[in-house]
Length: 294
Length: 130
Figure 1: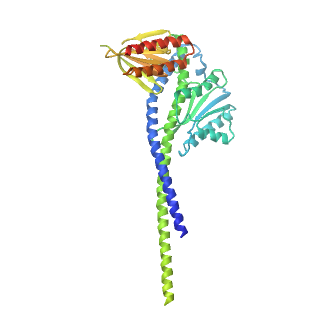
Figure 2 (figure 1 turned 90 degrees about the vertical axis):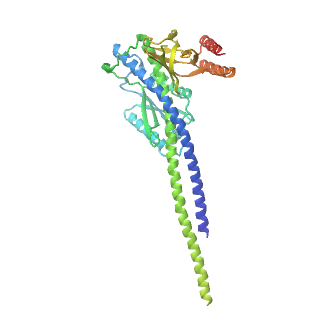
Figure 3 (figure 1 turned 90 degrees about the horizontal axis):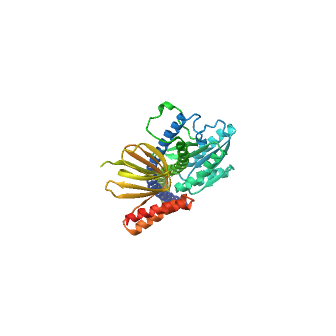
């Protein structure tokens, strides 16, 4: 019976797929652990930088007439052009991980387009880049490979041109959109506004620490610090995104393995039924043959 | 003996955390040392070498390319961008970390004078280990 052979072949192919998905899950689990560890260690730097930035900026803001001179801290009332940097994975097979980021990018773009603000897109990660290329949306800049192997130097290199453009007044805002790691089961979408840096203007709340810095030094320090802050945030987006990618893939592959298992089960039942049917037909044929001989 | 708590943090994590007797930092306006109960201050660091005198009086040197330091009476926090520790048991290991430190410095500065000055500091730090 051809039918039996077909089912058998199908069972074999599904269980092969199952093997692949299970292996992919294991690989992602291992990679996730590493990425998670990296992100955890790195978070400390973020905490300290943010703390120092907010401390110094609020001090300058409150003690100096007219606030901080730096463009990094200006609130721009009518932005003309902004940069959006998005981070997606280089590979697929991780559920809705990439599409979530892409949707958020499109939403933010639409919001700014409504306000008649020009948007420049810069992409990291093959999947997102391919999506926008396919849809005919132009990307200013793109980088493949960075999202699967984050590197501080490369990340800062990538974002530097945006920082420079911001300084030159070409753009009035900088966003980074990525899907970050929340816990092993959930990813969290981040839409981070990196520039301009928002500072607390509430002067009463400043902790009265004994921080002694000369006024002119403060602003120099801030400038230097903000650049690092932006660069670092770019890097952190990358490592957070890697962790999230692996957790998303782990889940997707787990679901795929379970589905394959169920499919094999259903196919086996079908196979047994078909075999029984064949046996029964054969028996009937023999019996009716014997009957007709009588 | 009086000690202060020193933390050195890079984007890749904490690289030094412990009680130290003193620490010498490459400040923007020149090198400065920090002892326990130092007055609070915050300043930028340039490329250079951080010398840490540990509780057992041994000195550890870490080469950095940029940094920001926050000192208060009991604690010193250093935020750095890239850092290479000069250490190793054998001559070979020391030579290797020396090489890494030099590439780090060469990567950030254009001025040859600055590179030479820092390189000299690195060399002398390595000399001490031998």
